[in-house]
Image (cartoon, rainbow, N blue to C red; front, top):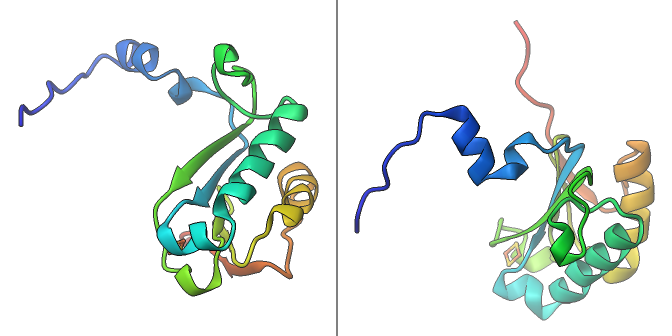
Length: 134
Ligand code: FES
């Protein structure tokens, strides 16, 4: 395997990866692991896609039906250890890990958490507190 050449030029990096300069408010990960997939992960992901795109919030290429000015990045992730309590949905920068998420919970997560900053407590299992200050 060839080692890629390290790129130091910031402008070149940003051109190669436009997401690096996106004005994002949130990054949402939906687990696509085996166990979560058995309890509806793809329906959860599809609900996020449908609802975020309907609100024009999903960051991404216009050619893919997304908004280059969108403020929410939606990505798949692998298993995070919530296998018995999926579907796992992680929201950053807050570091909130939601468990047992069903497709019908997605509008609530978008409207409360992503738009108003209110964690959906009934589904939140982990709320990271961040790095303590000195
Ligand atoms: S498969 Fe989703 S947390 Fe393990």
